[in-house]
Image (cartoon, rainbow, N blue to C red; front, side):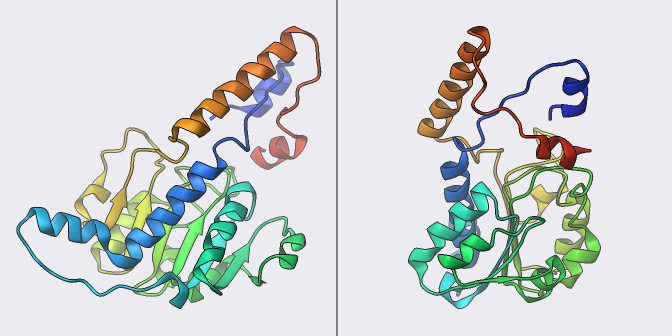
Length: 242
């Protein structure tokens, strides 16, 4: 990740493409949720081992979903879930967007309530000093024994070693992780069958990657031409990182 404070100290302007990857990340997140709920990854593995087991699962509409971080991607996930019916949705954000209440039936609660009450928990946060290691053994053990946790945001927010230990002790029904503290990842979570692992593929759809590159190139052209940048990292992001 880029050190925003070092950039500011040197007078370097930092721009980003915050909207471009959103659709792809949100869709991957939903795909992971459905995969975990129906144990698709487990059945796929068993079939390749010659084992035929019809696994009972849960429907999204019958769960309580907790979303921690309701920014661009968290909000897109809410829109995608709307097609599955009236899902009880617990949400938490450091800056709650109450405008969302006009569209969705949300319960704004503490992170602790999400850990304790949600069947499915999805993380959509930036990596900052406040979120580094935010979900570790203490939080994981607060979750239901069969709860599912998904992280498609940033590696380091969910403590990987603690997740391994907790799942090894048969706590949590499943996990899906797309981002890791050190990448490429080769840690112990690969030993846990019910842990779905992907190689930081959240933004890896052709359209979203193309849009990211186009928007980045347009910013470079504006900078060279002496025009104002359209997507300069806001001051708030600097404050959060500090």
